[in-house]
Length: 502
Image (cartoon, rainbow, N blue to C red; front, side, top):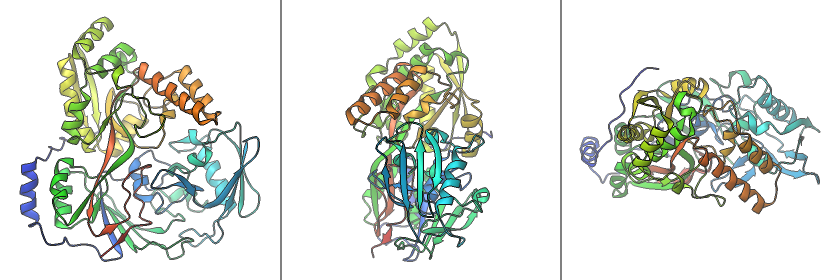
């Protein structure tokens, strides 16, 4: 994610019925894995299996809370919960956090876990040569000190009430010095499941770790299968080749699943701000009027209906609508093609052709085609290139070699990425960075909410990107399964509470 691929054609209701005829009549329970196993479908394949060395959400979707754990973790309701740390306390000046670690924890290779592993992991994540995609999570750490085998002190350069939340990200999981360098292909963590096998292009297999420190999961085995094509995903669920598809790529077929008692359709929220990202350093896109014109050329409602079959909430900035500090800024750039044409004329761009790079998810491929048509209406042509996920990460995210791309940012509360001068948006705003600095140093909830509102307005008024919709979580599962997350407060398929009920 630079081979060109044809985008998948949207499956229609007629196609869905035809597929149903191929895979069998409704009524009989689908074949399933054994009572202690599960087969999950995912659209994207993780490029590696180390969440501390990749920005791909698909990595966390396999390993977060299953294979790797951090000092803290995010629960299904979004709360920050104890992880490898059973408790923590904060000094009166807010500069030092002391974490009490769990005893009796081992890594999957049988080696013990202690405070030195925490020191190693956090220092590795924040090192100058770190490959961590979210190094800013650790930027405020001054030192990490082991105060005994089960106690760690983290000293900050300034008070930061977000530290327990930051340490709950997949990028902050604890790894062992002995295996850190090989986690990309042979991951070793402390979680309830251990790595068994990976077949590239097909699946990753996990098995229950018998030496786990916590409650043993009901599942003994889990297989994550990668199915990028919406039609194939539909057929696999109907045929019983998969037990669940937590982020189902064919929302147009959900009505068929809802009408079938063999399945549960699980609709919830995600942290995924879906946007038409723009390279602010690329030619005409360096001009804010051009970026505003692009935003005004887009009809969010048509994109949500056409790409997501109505599943999605319009947004006007990079913030989740279900967050208490959300500010509705969709009215700042309403759909107005005449205004878009006028802005382009004022900007003096002349005929404009932009490169639109699309990663594999359905929302991107289908949405990209609709966006291209809407931009054409105001005089902007696009050259579409469909990229595989690893290609997108290399060319767009790391290489900044693109004009436009459609992507959903699924990390929780990640508006801070706009303060990163080296980020792939190419946005550089001292004012925005000041807001984020003030936010990090503010503890009062009302004051924090006000600053979050300022941050949302700043990037919206600068028209950094064209924000489209908050991605809905649309999942399909065998009706006999229980414990899958309805919402996605972080990018995870947490299997710790999943079980078969009958």
